[in-house]
Image (cartoon, rainbow, N blue to C red; front, side, top):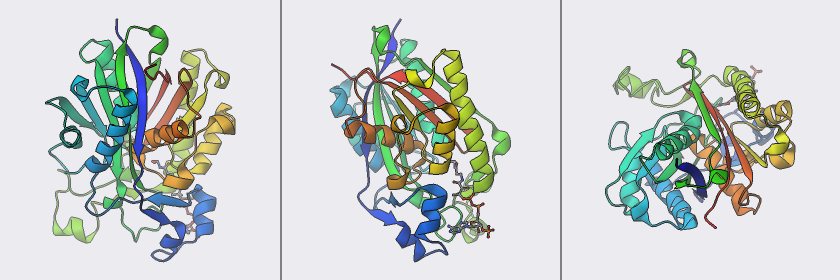
Length: 332
Ligand code: UT7
């Protein structure tokens, strides 16, 4: 049986910074309030001519280089995004494959909002373990600035742009294997985080434009409570299933939605601050890109090393949630 090994991590951080002070100029808010309620100090914004595939391709190139893999050997590309270049087609994964210069390859997008990268990890694992694919490029790429209503003071300051990527490859060494990925959803909470317009339910119309229905709307406070509860129980289930404790995990990488959520979940689960990767202050919430961007940050800081046990924990619109447990297994 083939095992799925998490070989590399990479990211692309757009250089343009939008600070809390910039938001003070456009909505009724303050740096003090945003910092206290979310932990966010600044977030990155893509250039006007940059779409998710541009960010994703740059992150993917880093992941490919670090995995020391030939592009011709990549046999599946999965892009997790809810801000695709185009609403329906082509998929952002197809565009990324083309921008990277890959030969014809199976490529598709995954729509699971902030849990997207964990969903992509589960799909990569399944394809490899079934023997269907050998080297899977997974990407989380988002340009939330394209779906934000910059007059919505309850939501617009939270999100940012960016991309992260990884190579997951077949290995015959069980010690390198992704241990488990557990994903789930509950569509009953569809209204908590939603872009209501522009799809088949409310096709693009003057009404959709006038009411900014193609922009994200979030019921922040209700989402907050469910996020804390779900992110906590998600990891509890994973740890109980594998009979592990926080001592067995080297790096806890939660979705970066709000520092208060991260702190509450980390405390409930018993993860010390030095085990928890935090980037929300720098990048804000980058949805499907948040976990790989955070992992890449810790990797570039020299914190994540070969053999370290990593635990992802994500939650987002859908609602969706998921966790992944694996040893980081870069090619020696
Ligand atoms: O990534 C996917 C999952 N997403 C999440 O997990 C997001 C979870 N939610 C959150 O992070 C928080 O709910 C927010 C940061 C979005 C909001 O924080 P909150 O503490 O839940 O604020 P709230 O909506 O309960 O509003 C509290 C007060 C209100 O004023 P009153 O009614 O108490 O006088 C708001 O009008 O804060 C006010 N407020 C603001 N004040 C300054 C709302 N937005 C702002 C703002 N600046 N930008």
